[in-house]
Amino acid sequence: MGGTVFFGVSMTLHFSRPPGLEGLGKLRLASQSPRRLELLRQVGLEPTVIPPDVDETQRSGESPVAYVERMARTKAAWGAGPEPCLGADTVVTLDGVVFGKPENGMQARHTLKYLAGRSHQVLTAVAVVIGDPPLTRSMVSTTTVWMKNASDQEIDAYVASGESMDKAGAYGIQGLGAFLVARIEGSYTGVVGLPLFETVVLLQWAADPHRASP
Image (cartoon, rainbow, N blue to C red):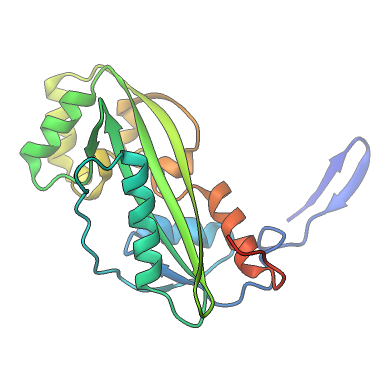
């Protein structure tokens, strides 16, 4: 990385990870999402992927925020081991309804037509578990997304691409689905599936040998 000049002073940046993560060592990722893995690689981490096998049913009366945070913590606990384990979960919510990954093309079309021309929230929770007995910390990122008023033809063409099938809310902002998004307010990486601000804060806590309990 080249030098950077601030107010006439040249500074050379040499770190490959955000400060505070130098001593993190190995990391587990309780997620099979290639997008989350790529985002962790973006900040210099190469975790061991531990696919979680947990019940993802939303509880009766459970709010979207409580649900997504519980899922992240449950997944992190599932993959817990000698190294810190990171779990994450993402949902799209509008009018109190939670939209996860569609089960088929018809459900994807229904979701996208419901979201079209309106704003919704993308909630992504991140949790980190470390130690024995385990300590857990978690954070939730909330981003508002405004969707274009897409036509039936645009929605059908997007669903036919196949991209919507493994995405919460049936669209991927980092792919072809970006054409459906008019604007966002909040964390872009949170919409992708792993908010890097919150993730780094939690991993800095995990890497600190003098960390405080949650």
